[in-house]
Image (tube, one colour):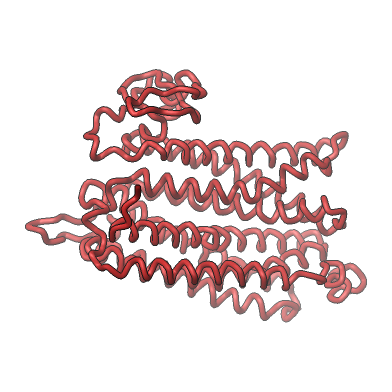
Length: 448
């Protein structure tokens, strides 16, 4: 039975916060891009449908930003309260990206406010569209800076520890550590893809409910095309991430694939079960594919878990997190590609009911893949909080009040989640886009 000591409670509280926050962080990075694309299409095509689309997405986005601010603040607070030993060592090293992430958020928030309150204020509508650029840059930079912190925890560099003291600190070297390029690329592309698919899922659901109009059909075509482009980028990012792990964190990749013996032509294992003797059964094997994934060659040697002490091996259940992330990623690429193919080849019907149902599923599944991916990223680093330097047990607080804090934060997240959904539903309920279109563009054109 799980013993709820201070370390376990600290891990549970941090995990709960991250699982909740990553929903809003993902939307916060991806939705600004979709708003910018929609407004661009509206101006380029002189089509007010896309402008209404951008306006409605922007209004909903403000609610998720507000919740994300609260949960992001909670993470910062918990780093200091729950992981004091880690912050004592790493805080001075990663202070720069933590500060810059806050700066990037305020940069985004300022321009978001200007953007929201200057609709129809410019005679040249392209000037308003230009306000999207700093919003997108700010949102993406927020993801970049905070991801460099996580990357640092996986491949720490930019400092020395001499006689227990952290010296020779280089904040830029710490930020631009070996894990940064692949992690940032993966985080950003997956956030873009997931946001596009969430918007597509909502639109497809409305069409399935027989409430769809030309507005919704244009929205679905836009979001699924963007979703396909970003899904290809995410697949590429995943491939590069696997190659990075094979080189820099071989134990993490080996745990994800239940790979115990160092060998070339290593099989890729999907799902299955494993017993206490590490015997695998009921799995799906793809011969040689793990070696190919690790180095673009079936002859690539992949390091096995047996090369590492047992106490330094990640828990083997991360295999399922990795599998679910990959399978959902492939599903997202497939469903987006299928819709775009149906859209381009006129003899096919992209409004096919089964296809629309698949799109509806793609939104929540993509967000689940984000969750599975982050669980794999964090748990796959265990037992380290700072790989090779400090374990999670060494970093956690010794306070006995973590249980009380856990209960309080759980209540906070429940309230935030409830009111976020409630406000979003109330914001758009009985406010169809057609009514807004008629109100703002009575003649159906931008010049009306």
